[in-house]
Image 1: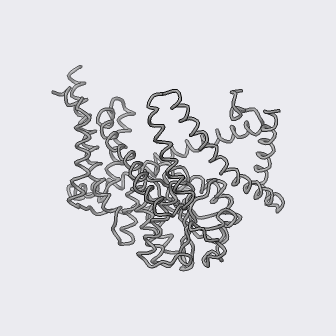
Image 2: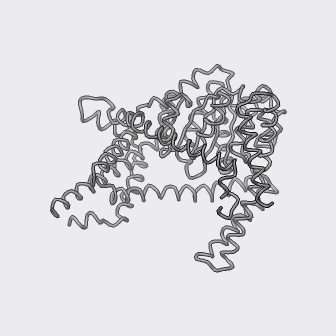
Image 3: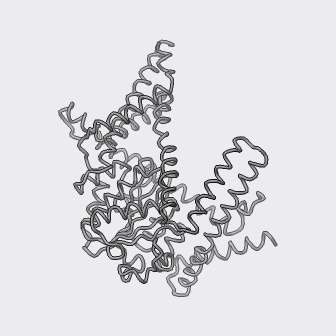
Length: 214
Length: 271
């Protein structure tokens, strides 16, 4: 019963939404709108579940003294401070906005900025023209990198008397042709995979989302 | 010697990258920007909209990609407000709610746009794809009030805007796969015109949609912001950032070339 009910719900809602997508009839469109409204209501409950799961995970880490368990206290402190300010005073309260702009924004931006340093170091060590394919990839990457910044065109136009803005033109050609065709192949492959997986889920063949693995 | 160069301490590379960022920031060097066709297409589309048209801007980014996407948002908002277009702002991600609110308020103040008449900021609602689908029937069924909790029915601008039928362009400023959601669920089903401004690493993924006209235009990372600033003749953060980025790209290209020269010399010696 614990498995049959979710499987039946998945089949019914999956089928109804699929049919409603192809039927402009007011009845089917009404049902579709109703289901979308339901799913909008379900989402906030999913957020509550996510918060509960986060609290549970970090509570377990602290209890078991897992590696770096001390940082889990920081998760709780951050969460409690934002909730204590955010819920009673609202999302536009200066204190809430201040915390966001002066704590979360610099921390997130710093983490992301580190990528530039890591990429530079990794590119120097690992980006080698060892094979023909690697050489092609390397050449394309260098052209796109140089064409992606205005200094590329600037240097080319100053030094080379022909082919104005060649680096940016070459970059655009790479994006418009080899990149586009390979991306389209990837998108088609993924889409076919998604369709077949969706059919398997709706028909109850694929049940891993229920947990248990079968 | 060659071996030492190839195994150079990564901290030296980190210092070189830091210098490539810091020195141009203080020198304020700038280079002429060539506008790419996908960015120009967004500019032209917005520029040709009638004065009472509505542009929906989705601020689907968080603080980590703020540096790339906020200059884009600011440039497009300046263009829209100067042209007298109505702007609706929203986000599908909780991190984007405050960021969208700040940028739209700042540019509105700068251009004299009035909240509730020239723009409305709806903020965040959980649901992502369901939000997109729900707005197809009625925006009010998803966002019953704006970010300041004012009911939509009390906002004059929203009287005439009920769903996608009354929105002329959606511009998704994204650091994740949200442009594909807009294309799949609003372009395909509601024939909504979509444009996107995305982080540099995501640009290549969206080119197939550009060719099929499912995207009317595409702004690539900070370069897109700088290009748009050039088009509206208002150089700001995007243009300044591109100069810094130019030096970092040059450094990485130089490092890659140098690394490969050392690699080939060593390989020849080994042979």
